[in-house]
Length: 94
Image 1 (cartoon, rainbow, N blue to C red):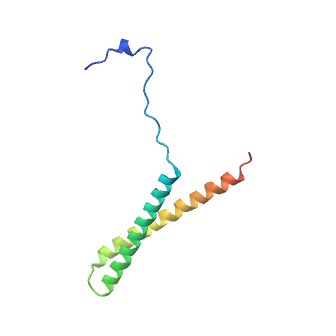
Image 2 (image 1 turned 30 degrees about the vertical axis):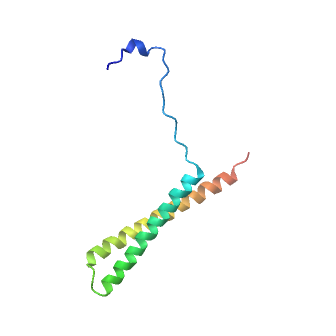
Image 3 (image 1 turned 180 degrees about the vertical axis):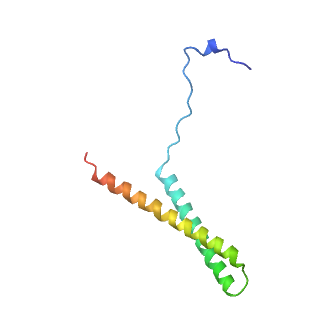
């Protein structure tokens, strides 16, 4: 089905409504992110224990350890940015 451009003159474009994040959705997202970070940390700890008894490959343990470290650094930076934004809002004068 083709639309004639002449028919579109004077019509209002339809725009999908913006998705608004509610606090419960944002809180759920943060909980899932923290749970994921915890899972990565526990898997790394388990892999290190397996390496100590000779059940794991050193290369895989090092890769997993670096992934865990990067995930923790990301979480810390996100937390720092959130605290900074909160502090900035508290300094605003109404």
